[in-house]
Amino acid sequence: SYNFRKSVLDEHAASQQHNKANKKEAASLRMVTVSNNAINNAHQHVLQMMKMIFWLVSEDIALNKIKSFIDLAQFIEVPYIKKEGHITYANYNSALQMLEAMSILIDNDLWNELKNSSAIGILIDESTDIATESHIIVYVKYCLYGIVKVRYLQLLQLEHGNAKSIYNAIYSLFDKHTCEKAQKQVDFCNHVDLILEKTYLFFYKSPKRYDILYSYQELLNSPKLKIHQLHKIHWLSRYEVKNFCRTLELLLDSLYEIYKTSEKKQTKESTIELYNNICNWRTLAFIHFLYDILGYLATLCLALQHRYIRFSDINPKIEATINKIYDEYLELDTDRKPKLGIHLNKFLELTKSSQQYINSHKLKYTSDCKNNLMGDIFDFASLPKDKNKLTNYETLELEQLIEFYKKPYLPNYPNGIVEADSLRQEWN
Image 1: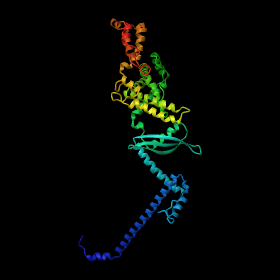
Image 2: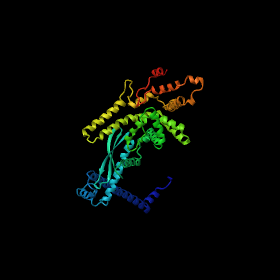
Image 3: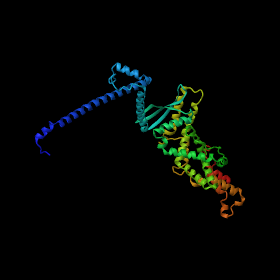
Image 4: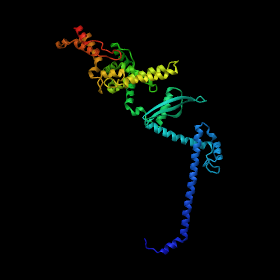
């Protein structure tokens, strides 16, 4: 309300209660100022301490020298490092805690950059201390906003010095910081890995299934090849996809034969599921891509493992491999399309870019042809009894053989084995 007498205000201003309130407010303001000054001095003291600790570590000087360093700073009157100060942190434990805090901050910044980078490479180096404990030094090379950086990441202690221990230590480090793995970003790569692993296990656990595969290889004079395992920790083992590609047709025929002859429902379901996964066009194109690329890398790896290799030869060998891959995959042909590798190109020429790689009639070719030949030609009990069927007897089998053998089948038969017209003329 504005309806009051001026004398009331004068009386209140002169009262004892009002004077006490003013004194308390003034005292609190002075307290805030003093506290802010003290906090600022402590803050500046800690900053100076952290700078001193950082310098000691950068110069590889032991942290237990921090007390002597502080005495020197006080002697030369470094700002905010005073003898009468109540906050000193002039002991090893305080210095170590500050160092750990700085380390966490730098570490977090580095991991944030790695998460935002477009590509990451890992470099490792062996480091054995005076107690012969196994360590590895981990560096990272990454590209951030178009700038390539190389940074020290961490010193990792190993349980053992083998490949598995190194892989687990590095994997745990990146997994701990939730750094995205390539297979998480590219689910398809993980999917192909799973298919290859399932194919290996499908035959590895059953000698009988391998016998079926070998029988088809022997029937068509194909090399006797096994499906090898692709080890996750030995990335060069992925070149074993060459066996998968070289015996692909017969592998599919074997799966169909196993599916057709098996009496167990579970086996039938697992077999046809594996068959359908393999018959995906993108999957097979990617595997043939690996066949080409890893062939170059495997050759390079073997060249670098020579006992008496000269250091001057290392860089030219690496450059030559890079140039080969570039020429095969990135160079454009006359149609302004990438050349790609020899095996991938052949695969693309023999197939159509569709999700289903082989049609049903091709799927059943070898097994059906084998059964037809054995049943119709060699088993007299199943000879054609109908006049119309007798007219086409053996012609059907001949055309099936021509259809199969007139096409190239890499890598064993780059060209067709037979000429269709010549074979028909000779047959007649």
